[in-house]
Image (tube, rainbow, N blue to C red; front, side, top):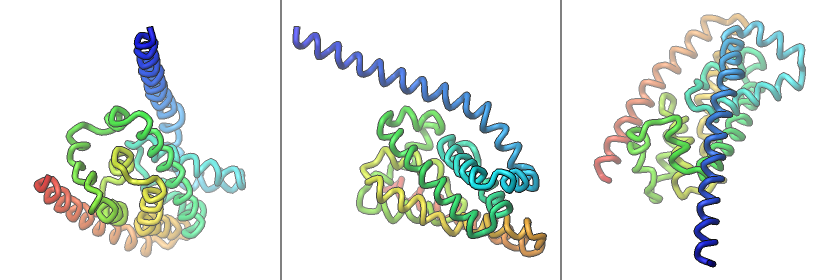
Length: 234
């Protein structure tokens, strides 16, 4: 009887975990449709967004942080447009700070969710092939350095890394430091460009975004080389 009870208990745990996972999927789909789509349309009109932010004061800043958190959670929502709009609406310094806060909170939630539901959650947003391509990050010896480089370099798949890292043995505190501060160069580039657009300094904005594109291409090539070399060693 005791064994039967233990078996039933394990089955109940699995059923509860499955229900929670399905609930998360449904919730993500609903949030994406009812919040994500309107949010993207809103962000595509930076002047209106700035007016909305100015009229809502501190609540507008909290709402923006919520948008960044949402972008991190729903991996296929691009983050760069939000960073540019942050610079446009709040200025380079405050916009960068708000983005870092939102990314830190979102990354923490992703980390905890992946630790809870495992690879099944990661597969909601990424194919098994992409997940397997990051197996080299499970090596404790070089994990922190490579993760830092991936977050530091522009043009790398940061959303994929954010979800994958939860599958490794890295500590959450270390991961949050990497996810937040290593991203600063790419965030600052976007917010400075957005700030320049807001101030009407279009030539400087074009230069900033052109440099960002070049750096993104270089970063992507470096990531590709690292990924291929590490995958061959595994």
